[in-house]
Length: 127
Image 1 (cartoon, rainbow, N blue to C red):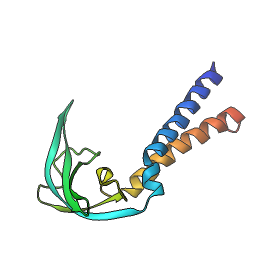
Image 2: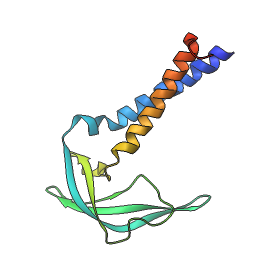
Image 3: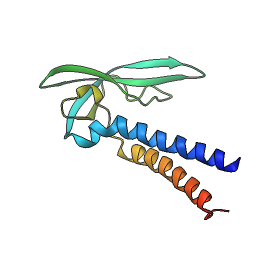
């Protein structure tokens, strides 16, 4: 029973890493572009609590673009009219987002660490 639970957990960790990597593959393999964007509004969601996600507008050589941040905040931050830097892979302005390298490194590290801990448990290194 324990082996089945460990294998399921390992499978979930590896699938999560694969999905994250697949999602970020374009960001990792293409040149990065940096643009200055302004906050034009906030997307509001109301689940258990109200959350806000900034809507950014910017212009590059292909025209005007508007993107919504994937990270939600408890308050509408940054304020409307604020100017922020966004990064995106060349040719994909629809993937523009504020640079959050530390956040994504932590996400990958936690998933990898869980997989390593499960393998160590299965190999008998963790009691």
